[in-house]
Image (tube, rainbow, N blue to C red; front, side, top):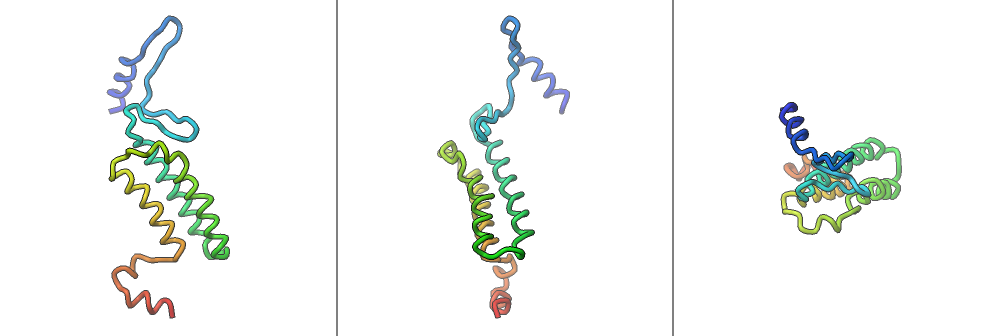
Length: 130
């Protein structure tokens, strides 16, 4: 697989005098990844990945800080990454938007300390509150 991709890159090299132009699959400008076919797949994948990494870090310190400090940490570290460059994501297909929305949903779950078990066993949620 790697040899084929190297061969494809070599074939697509354009020479203009002394300058060599090599096409790339994606390019990052001002923190927004633009794919060669403009589907924003790289931007969505990297944004979701970095947001979930920040959420994991926030989860590890949740018990050490107050609720208001925790909410501001989540807003500063996760939601600002999610909001940055959202004007370029206007015409995304629904399945890509769902990946971004999953980050927002997990922010809410983390904020309210919601566990998956309460969805399937509502009695457990009531006993946990007592």
